[in-house]
Length: 616
Image 1: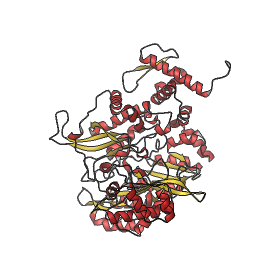
Image 2: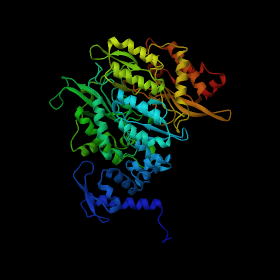
Image 3: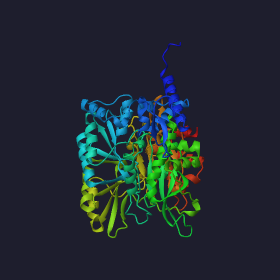
Image 4: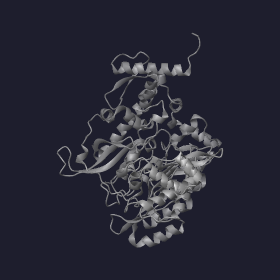
């Protein structure tokens, strides 16, 4: 027994124990035993001596926070998950030549390399498709006509002939062959689009209010802040050492929500009026800092009491990310999100750690001193609307569950260049906005949109219709979400006309990319047993919301086959229209209705056998 080699787990423990002991001795001012030392800054505080034997030289480099977090996890007896071990085996940011070699050979990555390649925005999505998906990062969802046209041309050369708008106001390519991976990475950079960090354990596309600068209701422009955050992430390598993905959003308090309360970090514009101002808190516009949103885990970002000037947001976000890098769970992927650090530590302890990293105290203010705007218009992202600029309007173009062909993308770019100022703005509702159109050109632009097979008007069912990629392109999805979302919308439109939108969110799996828990009606893909066969279906959730109407949708039924789900939704909407009070919204109706009342509405459109299934 004494001569047997150590197991991998034992080696991992001993390595981490040694490293952790050296860190502890260094912090205490004691000499380091296991190797030489190098000065490094931990958490933004004064320099601490860290061990730097030859094998651990990276401990003093830009990746040190993640490396120290991994080693301390092991030193405490934890076992790193396979993704953390993969990141230890090779730094995914240093794989450019390896990705190029595989692309030149026409090969897809295997094993850990499939995970690590996501850090460059490339997702190998087999078995759903034997191809790559590429996610971009467009800060604030803003892109220009020349870029949009270039993206369409690149898709025609190296991917499927379409572009998908995501629920983070972003774009994705699909159907990318193995030998086109580098053409995509080269082509995007030549269009000033950087996909680095758009996948894997990284900070995703930074979102903002899509009407930034043109909304006469907003308190402050937010796309400039999303851009600053974007560049800060790209140029600080420690921002890539997270234990899991991370989301940041800026909301300017205008008509279109950025869904900041569904993000790990939310910055929401608020005001302090003169009656509540003081010498240390002048009247004006600030950002309320909220933390821990992850609606797929049934939680919204919560206020921290911290108020920030606009010029403080990016630095504070950086400090929050660094604290998360150091403290996030690296032993359980299901718990490796900021929410769980906050649940464990509490907000006060976490803010103290952020302040220690920054080296200064943050401004904390009682909520009764601030005014939180509530000006959202749930139809402001579709159709024609006046801008704050005199004589100018913007149009929200409706995309079928977020997809447009490359020909449509080129025509949209032409409209933006000819009739607007060249800008195109993507929204979190999977559509796009063309701003700065002269009022006298509205009819010409309308005709051009209709001629390309799209629309600038939408029913109350399609305005809030959101769907993830689904089983047609994602290996995790249990159902074909985009197809089924369109079927549901068509079935509702055939029977009803609404005076206000009902948001329907269709997601394919527990990852909740379409955020099913916050929809008026939310669907999560599931495999359902029917006569000894497994068929596509969904779990149904009712009464979700965001912002001033925050709520997690209630699950009232067992999973149902897709055909039954469609009939059930039609029955529920019909019951809502019959029983609502005055102009009551669907969310208000569903929240005042008991579980049994909602089940009875659903049963009205079911067969006797299906009614028995719901009842049990």
